[in-house]
Length: 223
Length: 208
Image 1 (cartoon, chains in turn purple, blue):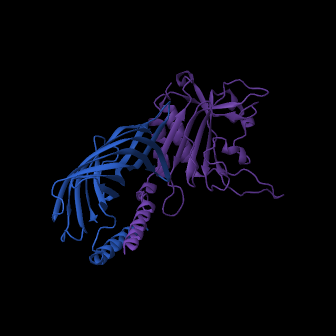
Image 2: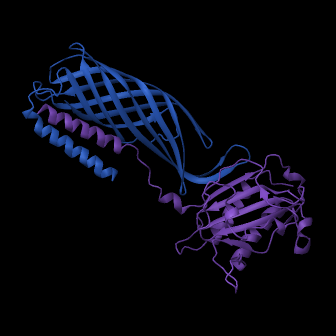
Image 3: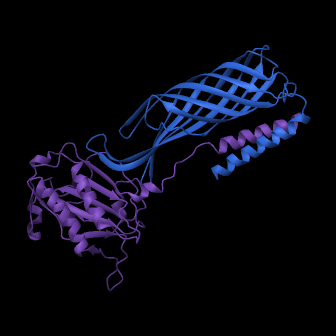
């Protein structure tokens, strides 16, 4: 009888241990968007005067191919995309920066924006790796801006495993040294997630508010 | 799954109670065991200070004399707190706007001792002290992410309680206790700092 009771004690102890830690329900957390920003602490943003922002948003996760079956970059250009781009423009203008409109002289701007929307996360093989884009074909080639041969983040930051329905914005410093072996620094970074609505499409109102929040929580972005 | 485990524990406790009248003795001579449901809340910090019943304890001891025991214990508890969307200023130029759920998980273990006032009576009140190590994890859950940090600390916990034996000769009954604990665990997470973990709580369980 004593042995039998001792067995129960160990069974109880084992059950206690395996049932230890309790996680909270996170279902409600996914209904609200997240805004994360980070920036280079060495950059004086008040010395920036002009910026260039493309008229389209790169779609990450697109399986678009050309006539020969080669993968090609796909861009988002409809009125929704324009709404989001205009939100960036209005926020930059409010902070005293001047937009360069002519794409042929985009490299003359002090900084450039590259906007991306994550439609699918298939390419994100490097979670928690800031250089995930090296796995993604056609991701904002630094050659788009000028004679740079890569780009980099001059700061340590938290890198999230990007999820479907995320919006990414990077501000690159076009005044940095270019040429052989030189990389283009990303001096400001915005990551917004949780933008999918019930129809699993991006909620443009939420996305615009999130972009505005990104600027609000980056008070150093001011001319 | 966690709920089913608690139901299983309750069922085992009932089985143990039903079977015990045939035992006619303690499991081990001059020893006692407690299996308790633990409820409590952290005090002194507001990281995750909602009252919670997500805790349990196991404890056993040996009677050095009729009044004094020495033994060991292990308990755990998780407390939560929900935070509305807010902007956190992080290191460097980082900032994060999100709603969160915070959690503190504590798992102390070590040695315990009791002074028993009325040995072999139906009600055995006691005062006890626990000393040991404390492992803790503080976590922030936001969107689909969990960010956390672990820490170790020294643990100290005074306790008062009573063991209730409907038939004192059987040495099987119930246990009720009230405790305070302090652990030296210290952690930083996002823009939050937790320096020392204090708790106040209750335990209800079985004693044999």
